[in-house]
Length: 284
Ligand SMILES: [Zn+2]
Image (tube, rainbow, N blue to C red):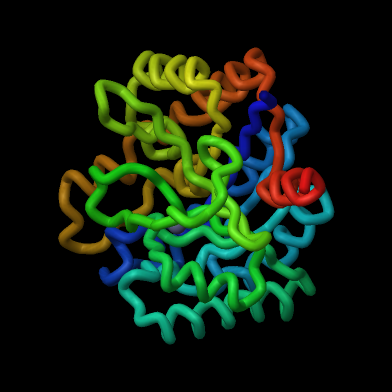
């Protein structure tokens, strides 16, 4: 069976990270330079992917996003303010999503198809809202219970098309990649994990992925590539948060090149999520 890799990015500022969201952040500092660094890496391998963009920065990023689309990438929703959907009521979540869809339409004249929740924070009730609003896929599922912020999305009545692709009435759910090590699911697909873990460990986890013959649905953020290393975190930021935020940012580019080469050597096809929707739709 053919294996696919979506090397997606969640396009957000450093201050959208959940651990800074309710703090007094100096929002004049930006890490969005990391977006172009990632685009240059993808360009080198001619990889097209999906960028999930926070609604409130769509206007500011409009020229860059238009170019991204013109270059053949896909853009999709990542909520309006990067609030976790499970912290909103269903009504608030619906309003937030409508506002995000409208921002893409107003500033980019772009019809979005997909959504990924901040912190994979989604449940079935909110997923039904995405369907009601006419989106065609969601990528908020992850099978990983060890993270305190992540949601647990029930897709038991979906048709399972692959290890990590589910469908119900033409709506698709993509599950972010984890690998099973000693009966525990470990994400091998997040920029944070790639950045913080020693490369040898990532390589080991990738070998597990290759053995399992799974697709690879990955996500990373602009701040992880940003050369703006001197962001001043808000007052009272703890050491663990500083570690999570700063660690490995200088070596992440090298690691991404290695990761792409591993995927290339193992015949992964690099696609956007909308391509996978189309492939499965045309197979019906
Ligand atoms: Zn995010």
